[in-house]
Amino acid sequence: MSTTWGQRLLLVAALILAALYLFPLYWMYVTSLKAGSEMYATPPAFLPASPQWQNYIDAWNVRGMGGFMWNSVVIALGTMSLTAVLGTGCAYVLARYRNVWVDVGLFLILMLQVLPGSLMITPLFVGFSQFGLLSFPRFAVVLAVTAKAMPFYVVLVRATFMSVPSELEEAALVDGNSRVGAFLNIVLPLARNGILVSAILIFMQAFGEFVYAKSIITDKALQPATVGLNSFLGPNTNDWNKIMAYATIYVTPILAAFVLLQRRIVSGLTSGALK
Amino acid sequence: MTPETQIELSGVNKHYGSFHALKNIDLTIEKGSFVALVGPSGCGKSTLLRSLAGLESISSGTLKIAGQVVNRVPPRKRDVAMVFQTYALYPHMNVEANLTYSLRLKGVKKDKVREAAREVAATTGLGALLTRFPRELSGGQRQRVAMGRAIIRNPKAFLFDEPLSNLDAALRVHMRKEIRALHDRLGATSVYVTHDQIEAMTMADFVVVLRDGVIEQQGKPLDLYDFPANRFVAGFIGSPAMNFVPATVGGDGRSLVVDIVGGQRIGLSRSLEPGRKVIAGLRPEHLALSASDAALRVPVGIVESTGFTTYISTATDPELTVVETGRSSVKARDVIGLSIDAGKVHVFDSLTDARL
Image (cartoon, rainbow over all chains, first blue to last red; front, side, top):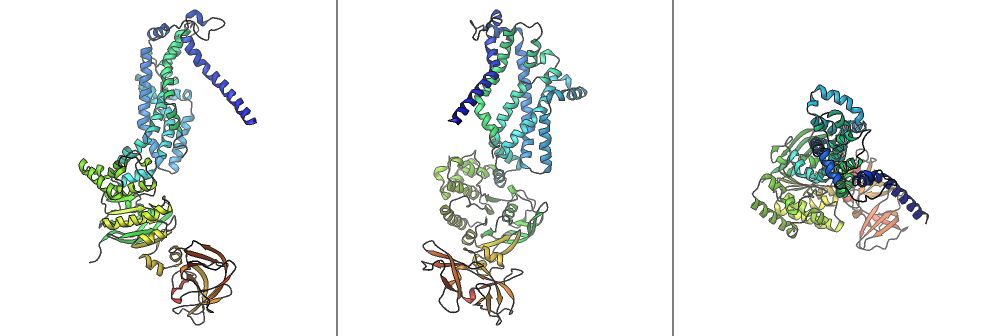
């Protein structure tokens, strides 16, 4: 009896917390469909009287969203590719070799993960400017975000590689393959799921990146959607419905992807971790 | 005609950091023979096999396969096939792809690969399963795929790393015979690692007993059984294990006073130095129940019967195990007489454990 009551109580608490957390998301969708006057109505309308789909068209055209979105996609794709190419090899080595140096390496990698982006941006900015990388601001952001996302990716993918038994590789070696061949032919296909999931998570992280892009990219034409969104906010902002429409266009694809891939992401994150 | 040597190890050592895994291994494996490497876990038998495959590099010594030194040759160029304990089937390939992986790597033509796959599938009874994936197979079937993958290559040697230890008891006995039959049919050279001395005894032409990285003895299975070089081999080969009893050589030099229930005597078929401290080795199957006066009188502890054989453990220190075929009327707490043929008593030095 007591356990069921306890469970119900916890469930209610969880629902309240979820509602608190998800309410802004709901409010974003609702507001994005409201007319200008409806936004300020008291009491607020929880469903728009007549959905203003025009808001979306306005947000896209007036705010120049096409360019911002394109920049976000470029940065996210660039980060994902660079992380996947460099991080996969690193994760594999860390998964297969076990010694003191590997442990030290792993520790350093986890340390990197701890450092906040806003702390790192000043030295990064100075460094990039020394190397002239600020002339290629989107590439500079890709580099910075890759450096920040790498530990997360390496730790996840390493766990995936560790779940692939080394006997399979050895069997491939004895069967006549080289080390590289065994990696490409046997290990990589078996680790595919974990790598894909980790790469998608990196994509999402890079897609939502703000601190580095805001600091490094000054040219408005090269800024991603996050920085664009930020630039619309000011003391005199009053077209919240358009801004919410902008935000909706921006996050809905990511949300949709996450919901669709949710099961795979969760299983990809835990596979290997349990073994 | 002297048999051709297929694998030759001389002075092979393997170190892992400060751990000395293989110590001065000298071993010659003849072409077409079935050699078992046997020993308790951690004895180095798997390391030795992996060194043959090239998955481990040896620290010193020479390793030859078919007359060629392969110390630094990578696994893919050694032309040996290995069957792993876990089978190591490629989970993302179906049975046919698993079988033919090595051929496809070699760039063999497609129709030839198909033909070879069909042939091997027929020999191993996998004909109907070619399109299945490893996860859809039973343990025995996976085992066959692992075997087939080795057979299809027609390699210089087959290396088996405890291939039967994941199967249930009945299937294990069956696969034992099947592997041996396959070996004979292919005329292959096989090296078989196991911790199960019965597998080694029943399957192999030649058994190598390892302990702590050292070859304790090598020879034909029955020679190891009849003339174990030391107490370790004597205790390892044979089931149930040999009984060891501290003893002293009698004044006549042709009997042993065994240190059990007040110093009784057993006869010896040869003479040893009187008064010498030794260890007597008595195989359970050589101890016979006897009513004669010369027999050892011992109390019975536990009696276990499997129907065909009866295992009698004595209530003595050290405990003796006796195997009787058939039913036995002996009960716990009885006192029985045990006799042993003087020619079947093994004697080991009490300090060095070496056979005397």
